[in-house]
Image (cartoon, rainbow, N blue to C red; front, side):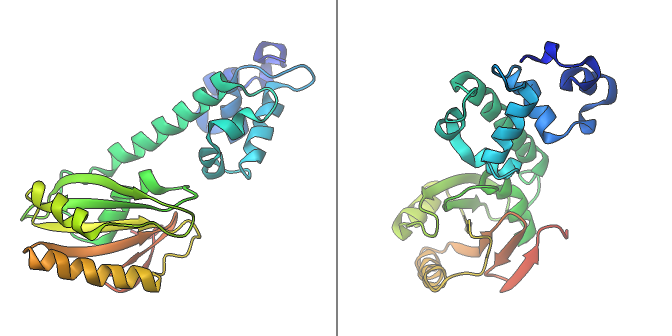
Length: 231
């Protein structure tokens, strides 16, 4: 069933035009992207099934990937690509809004705001590095590694060499915990100590190591847990 076959007042596209996108549910917005359903399943029903496949959340939908989306009857590669493109645009919008590059990095909250568009909703660990100049302005932001659901391996020599190559005076390390608990592990603590020593020997400051989850983060520099909902 296509959108045009649904009652006019219930069509997501017409509803968006007349009432604005904020009036639509996640399923209705997704239906506009999918455009059509399959025999016996309307596009809105198909959208709800796709959302359910991701646990009913946009975070879960983001984590599905093409293959799992295509495993749902009625969602082929073209539809999956449309959904992923929309999600990626949303993430890039958040990245633009962070506006951290125009200001010096002065605390873990700014680090969190900078990296969360890239780490939110991931089901695996990633490690990122922020390279800063003498005034703590961002020189470069780069993903270092991608790991499993509870660990990722980082080469200390590579981190220090990267900072030297980019003439960075300071660095901030960031990684995520998909579990939702940002408390550092023993391995996180040991690695941070080793990186601090290696960077210091080359006159590079390790300003912080921030462990992020979707709504909370932990700062090694402050030895404190933060609620991301509180500025």
